[in-house]
Amino acid sequence: MPTNPNSPPRISEVAPRFLDHARVELQFGAQTIEKYQYCLKRIERLIGNLSVTEITSDKITNLKSQMLARGNGAC
Image 1 (cartoon, rainbow, N blue to C red):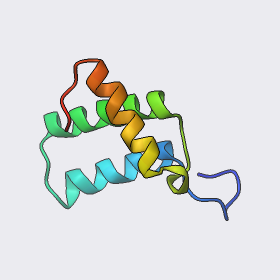
Image 2: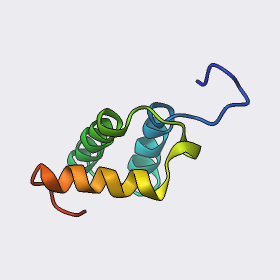
Image 3: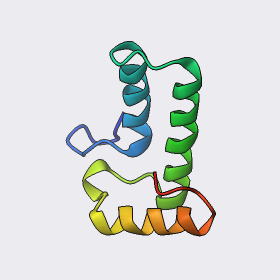
Image 4: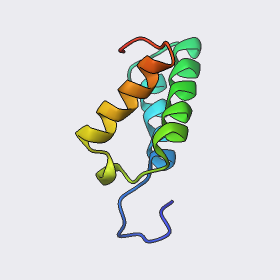
């Protein structure tokens, strides 16, 4: 939960909800959920535990650049 109820949620707060949604509503398999969880934690490590309103297109471009530099695919 956010420390201030009026502040936007952070990546670490929305990631578990997304994973629950993917498992229940989208019926993703266990391995897919594990991969998404790993990727979301890695993203948080690279750009920080930003609030969702702080995630800009520049931050996404920077994240993609970092991941490509590490040999990861564009996806």
